[in-house]
Image 1 (cartoon, one colour):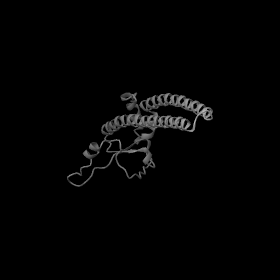
Image 2 (cartoon, rainbow, N blue to C red):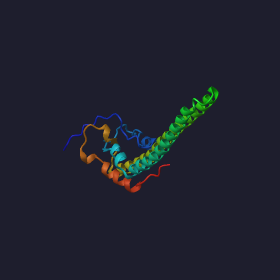
Image 3 (cartoon, rainbow, N blue to C red):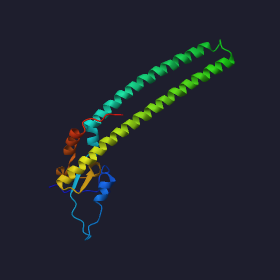
Image 4 (cartoon, one colour):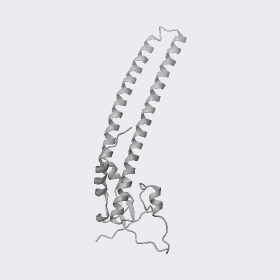
Length: 186
């Protein structure tokens, strides 16, 4: 049997809600804590391989592609406007050229702002969707731990060595795929 060497400062997955963690943090009346029953879950693998996470990535990629097409079209319009402005420079008075140049610069700023807003929207959508997955994942981990009498669940990424029989990742991934096969990105 492989001896487990667990060098981990954190005890309970950050996925569990503070209320769940607080419920289990009360010291026993006699001052003696029960022996810990430890398991691990590979959160990164689950967030990479789950159907819900894959659906989020696909939806965001589609949105990002649509946004990129819009940006490319806007850039082409700006290049055309700039070319026209350069060609007209000799024909325009100094004041007229300045006005047109300022109008062009305002268009550039507006497009830059639009690009930043779209990037922010994508980031927010990703984070909101990931939080939905994490919340469901936390519930599933808590249920799996309770069914198996596990008192401490650690993220596998924080564990140096662990016996494979203590790994709940496959079980949790299967349950997450059943409970949450898709997340609709808002």
